[in-house]
Length: 294
Image (cartoon, rainbow, N blue to C red; front, top):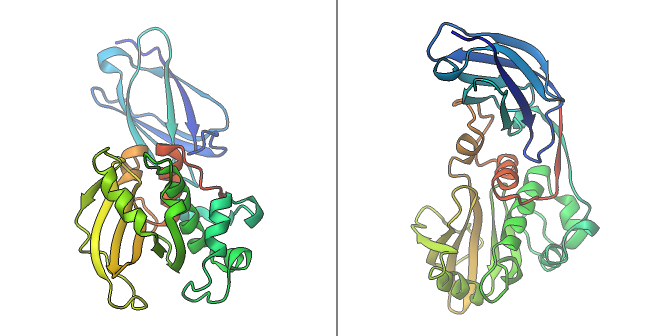
């Protein structure tokens, strides 16, 4: 049995930067009793791990636990001969976030600034618009709106219009969604886009408008065909008036994309900070804000 296998291991965050922490690494060989544990390895550089079994006896379950990120598990097969190279990405553990650095209002995309400027009746922020509204938002709402506007900017129809450009005014902001007055054109574009595969129709019965909207009836719910981080738009109509519940669905993204160990989530998987990691890692959509970790 050859025990001369080598593993070159690189650990990254959702942005592709190295995890600059000391990490614990546990190996469990699936064929032999060989379960080395490496403590406080420096993840700021590529790690070279030696003395592993190779070939059919070199299958290991690798579990890595950085302090500020969710632990991730991965199966690796150690090559005979040349070193095996593995790059593993980690989502931030939101319980380890001490603060968030947001872009200034002036640095937001023009369409985002326009939407916030045209939203004078956001629940709990009435009379505030534009920069005043943006700066009045708590971190969770601000992160949520930046996630959604980034995703709606990237969701474009064959007419070259984006979902964002057809949102007229935000009326209520929550961490995982917002309720907005939208152009009727948005509903028609979304419905038509089911023929191109951009959206598909889904059951929207669990989506309800808040009390400020009276007399509106549901008029269809649609979701983008992304594997994870889907944009869902649920429409409600009253005559010619159209409003929408707009959110991003996690759909188990953290567990699937990053292979996070079960039962290691802090808070809801649909927390906007978790959505941030899914959008960045899976769709390369940067919502513009950064986490400062403990």
